Amino acid sequence: MEPISTPRVSGRYIESYINKNVMIVGKVIQVRGTEALIDADGQISINLTAQEHLTPGNACQIIGKVNTDLSIKVLTSKDLGDNVDYNVVQSVVDATQQYREMFVFDN
Image (cartoon, rainbow, N blue to C red; front, top):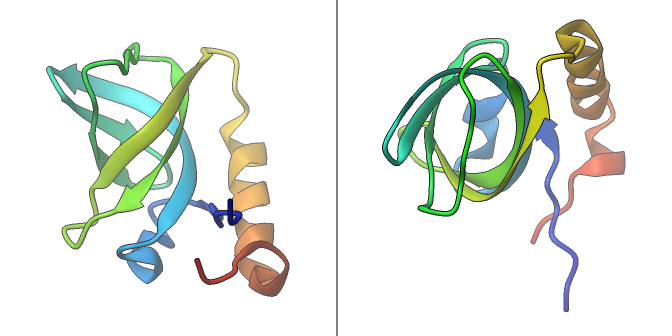
């Protein structure tokens, strides 16, 4: 099985990853059925599967594919609870983007 590149991104960088897999950490703002809205340095719409369960107010980690409308189609998700330092999360995202050659490769 070939490895899949899932670079860490935020709302600031998502436009550069259309039709690519990404990892994103953000705060769940709202969940409605199979749609969620998270804040990850900008609001991002998440297309959930029936198996995904996110809690408003908690942080979540999403691995998914960026759609042309900049929403994310979820492949996997994880609830991270309510004790996440979003400044540290954004610092990791910024480092990933600054040193893309270390973290991003073509699938």
